[in-house]
Amino acid sequence: MTSEMTGRRPMAALALELRGSTRFYEVLSPESLFEIVRQCFALGEAVMQDHGGQVCQITANSLLAGFPDGEGRAAERAVGASREIITRVSDWAGQWQERFGVRICASVGIHLGAVVAGDLAAGQARIRAMVGEPASVAQFLVRRARPDEFVLSEAVFAALGAAPEDIRPLPQTVSLGESPLMPMYFCSPVHAPDYRLHVSEQWQPRMAQPAV
Image: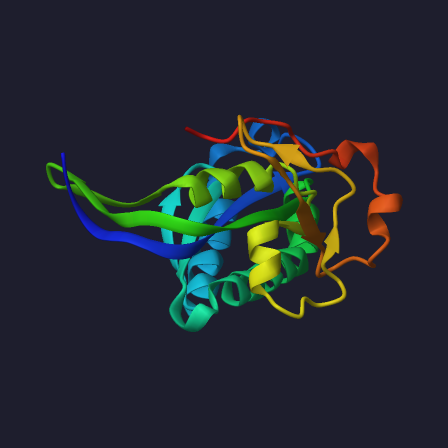
């Protein structure tokens, strides 16, 4: 396997995950699930590009994108992309629920730091990839997010400067291995600021350790 790398560079890593009010991959046919995922990721790629980012990895129900820190605006661009993708997926949710009988939402995690990104090649196949702590932490943070919500690390929040009022601190902090406790911040572009006080227990985030 060979690779073409951009070299280590500062980026905002954005992890997007599709969520359902039920285990949609168990109740939908493969054809229906593929149609939803295809629509979401086509939208996601377009939104990331519009905000100066690029999709680096895609799995069955998640993607990872990077935003180069040109002019110190990587955090701002990643947050802008998060707002747009969550809002637009939410706009589609009613149609999908009526057609397929499940509610599909988007959740996002964002972290900022140095990564290596580039193309991997194995034979004739080529895939894009991004590795480094920001990618792993973003994938951890998305699991802390509720549906229709994005969660940011303290590094992203600080890089925003004057952060919007709808981005608020989470009441708990997390520790990643031997790292110090890390404050987190959250925002839902489609819900009232106090929605977390009333949200159903069925939307509790999944807990998982960051990918190695």
